[in-house]
Length: 211
Image (cartoon, rainbow, N blue to C red; front, side, top):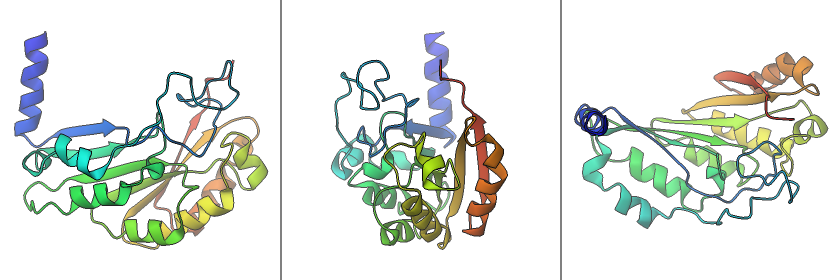
């Protein structure tokens, strides 16, 4: 079995089909109750006690993924499992390094999940002009009260401004919504609001973690 896994890895490597899912940061400006980083037992919506706050620098990323390996990777996905990628200080520089690699045969793409309630519109607009990048913004309501009931610590107005700035560029913009009783009847309104700002696609999932 182990040999099969190793062979599969190298087959993917040789076929330029590797997809890398990684965390760029364990920092987050939000306190979502169901998040993997949230201590829902003892610390309200703060991070779990064992979670070390850290982030990946451009220098470290280049050591992990030197240029000769980039062409073998089809996609980098920066998820928000234990922190928001938008909190990584070198996010733009890392994405620029990946997408500017001069490989015309097998160009690598980047996708990012974020609550979008950090940085400013200039940053997101600039990021959207890097090639082959997609950002998925979290939007869970039509107003601040509805949105922040779950996305605690975030500012919906700022999220929508950043989302619109990114959508104004050539890159792909998507929205992800978690459904609860307080917003499930407003899903169509949430999506209409986002489409008006230039979003390319909206997705949703039903919450199933609350006890």
